[in-house]
Length: 307
Image (tube, rainbow, N blue to C red; front, top):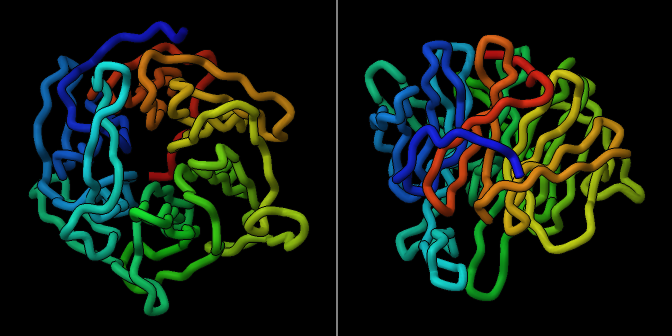
């Protein structure tokens, strides 16, 4: 079990943590529909009310926060005593998802993208910026009473001028990240619990291997046993750290996929991890079913984000 310190509780399904230089952590509260800031002493302040279902978040080259908004969820409880909060399906007023940008000083929210090539975004989930100032993001899709959407990976410019679909279809693509040198893209699929990898050949372009690879990428890891994969972060040595659902904790996958280690945490909805502190050796982890943000010392430093 990872030894951790609880920074705060009472969050409404937190996700998308970003460590800030002042020691605070910016994150989304999906059920609450907000972008919030958690101070080192645990105080929670709302930066912006986004509505919908704010999900993955990242700081862009302009210093603003870019958010994957999944369009909202219905909510339920699970566990033997119904103690765990979890998203279920699309709400009655759901129309689509979108990518939005938040000014951290004013709280102003601006929608950048709602569709690609005429196809509405269904459930944008996680996001990472490359060194060129563009961003990759996943669209997980939505769960419906009798079906689930096929998802994909997209690349877009931060100024709102271009979006393109790069990989489709995937099965519930969720976490996304880049290798420390930016030459590999990693994606975690939730329901199959797989980590996929592609070589990045140019900004917004991937090398595809059409056979037998899934979605044109390499299957880096697909551990046995029932679990589901959520968001991810990458260590400075290239390890991919995947927040793991049901089998709650962080799964650490080596860059070549030969080593897979699971570090447990006491929350079946361990949804995200980011690195912070002066040496990037503090991990900040969202325990979403119980509404907590926790931190712990990490054995190795994380990769510094581009912005």
